Image (cartoon, rainbow, N blue to C red; front, side, top):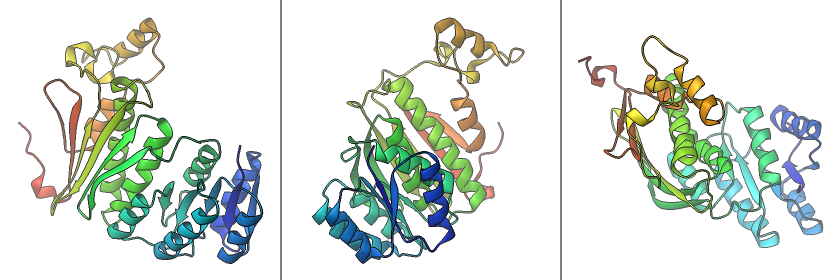
Length: 285
């Protein structure tokens, strides 16, 4: 378990994160400033650095370059005052571990920092294929922590979207992404998933493609989406019979939080569409 360095202890956010890490018995220290952080990195090894929530993305990227000149393997969780899509893409290309702006979810930040402190396989987990505001495409390794990392960037890329619409879409994307990793790739880190996020004038669109053989709806007896209308727990019984972990609500949940959920013929590709303009929503058949 590597040590965590938190830059600055003057803010409530930094202190709360530090308290959460200390409560989890994770070795951590505060630095007084970025200069002090670089000094500490020269003196001893830290696996994770969490930047100051009062910083800017540009400042953090410059700091990350300096830190990696000292400790090439350091993982950086970027906290910043605000971000633009261009800045989030720059953070993604710089291979920061994660990115957060206000309102900060202290639990998510602390949990990700704990995961980062014990993760040594992260560096090539997210490969940027194409990225510009409005269109970002990546290829990711099938690991749970990689999905959680990717979601931090997805949320920041859509930070200017109305909160309710963004949260609904992010919830759906996360469910589909985890479903692809679990059922399409069996959480095999040697397998990859392609994820593309597109922002149009009236909608948010996510495309997810997994390496699996796909599925047919009639084969989904272990999923809530396939339950008979009069038996809402049929999939739970089936999962117990097959020895599958509790769950099975992913597809049902995703379908209920986006406006359109479209699968390819064999089922290993999916489009999630969330309309920003209510007038654009599909009319009931």
